[in-house]
Structures are given as structure tokens and as C-alpha cells.
Length: 334
Figure 1 (cartoon, rainbow, N blue to C red):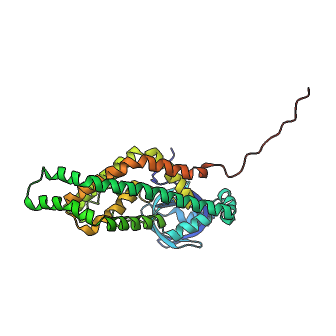
Figure 2 (cartoon, rainbow, N blue to C red):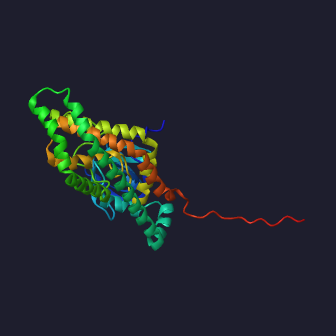
Figure 3 (cartoon, rainbow, N blue to C red):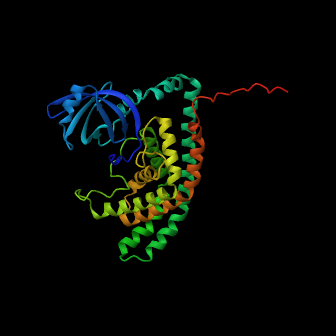
């Protein structure tokens, strides 16, 4: 029986030579495919196969990529297909080296695309169009959020106990409204950073995974994670098909493997950016939960239109690279 596929992220094929070192063993290998958190490598020669045969799962190895960085990884699989290596997250210079050694079929098409001014201009135009679509939708979401937040906070105050907490809720809408320009500016800056570095991990755990039980996470941090996670999971469930198409297409445009954490248009990246935007206000945790929920609803109402528009911009990437051959038939005799 074939081993069960464990990768969470899509694979990209490549052919990049490397040197693998572990436990006093060194072997020449070739990376055959990779994703954001893993690589499949195959020993090149019989002597390399013999050297790698004794490596045990769970062993920490060093992988020096030709033309790329040296990676530390954990051996998680060893079978007839090769060695499966897991990393925390591939750095961008490693991804660049792996992409440069893409499989022959992709490598033949890529130089023409890269060298063609029309192709390069078209790809850049697609990125700009995507950014404009995102900015328009998020500006509308922020406007709706600012309009509905006072009522949401007023509704939440009714069930609260304690003068201090009720006072914090009462003043939160004014503080948010007063800093609306700063919020918009910080929100935009965080989103631009996510757009420039889509595979750079955020400071906290993914919102689809609870904070580690071994980590020192206080109750307030956990409550904030819950409020953000609830919004992300609802939107991911609502828009699963559209998001899958978007990540495949935008990943092809940027030549990067994307997932729900690294997708700069996904609800996780957007909610992370919004979290950073309101952070300087130092709102109490329970107030932030209402703020996250209110913005999340404004965002959710616009996600269907946003992801449809983004996919329309990127749909030309689905077209075959080579034009179909037209076969002309000779006219039939009269």
C-alpha cells in the first residue's frame, strides 16, 4: 500500500542537486519536489543510496542546496520514493533556487515568459489589478465596520458586569473612530508587507491551530486567538472553492506555494493585518473580540465578490501556454 500523503501544501516539481549530511553520513541527493514545509530528495548514485539507507526517521539532517542556502530539516519519511524532509518554513532564497531548477517542461516555458516584455508586463498588471481589487473591498469593509461598531459595542455592554469594563466598552467606539486614519494606514502597511513576502510567517501560530499547550499563553491571548480564528474559519468555509482556485492561480503568478497562512488575500492574512492595525489602541480583550467580530462580518459580506473578482483577473493563467494546432481539411470533391 502506498504511504498516506501527509503534506498540507501543494507540491512543485524541481530537479536541484544537494548534499545531505547527518550522523556522520554524507550523500549526494536531488530534490524532486517541494512545498512550503517539506522536500522530497532522492539519492543520486548507488553509493549515495547505501549511505542514506541507514538514516532513521526523526533524525535532524543538513541539506546544502546547490546555488541556495543550507537547510536544517527532520527526516520524516524513507521509502522507495526517496527521503521526505520537513522544515519549519522554506526561506525565500531556497524557494528561488528550487524554482530555478524546475522540471524540464516548466523550465522550457519559463525563460520565454521571463524574457518576454509583454509577458512580464502582463504579470505585473495582474498583480496591480489584484491589489486594487483587494484595496477597494477592504476600504468598503472598513467603512462598514466603523459604521456598525458603535451598535455592536452597545449591544455587548448590556450583558456586562462591572463599571470599569462597561466604561471601556462605552469609550471604545470613540477611540476607534478617532484613530480611523491611523488604523487604515497601519492596516494598509501590514497588507503590503504580506503581499511582498507571502511566505514569511507571522509572529503567532496559524489561526487554524490553537496555541501550543506547552507555550505560556495567558487567558487573554487565548481569547483573542478564539475571536480571530472564528472569523477566519467562517470565511474559509464559505469560500473554500474560490480560495483554492485563487491560491493555485496567484501561487503560479508569484511562483510560490501558497496555503491559508501565506495567502496574502486570504482571511487569515487580512485578519492578522487588522489585528496589527488596532493593536496600538490597547483595547481590553473583550472589546477586541467584539471589534474583530464586527470587522469580520463586514469582511465576510464582501469576500464572495472579492474572490470572484480576483479569480477573474488571474483566470488567464489557466490558459494553455501553446496555441492549439489548427488542422485544415481538404475540401471534399463535389
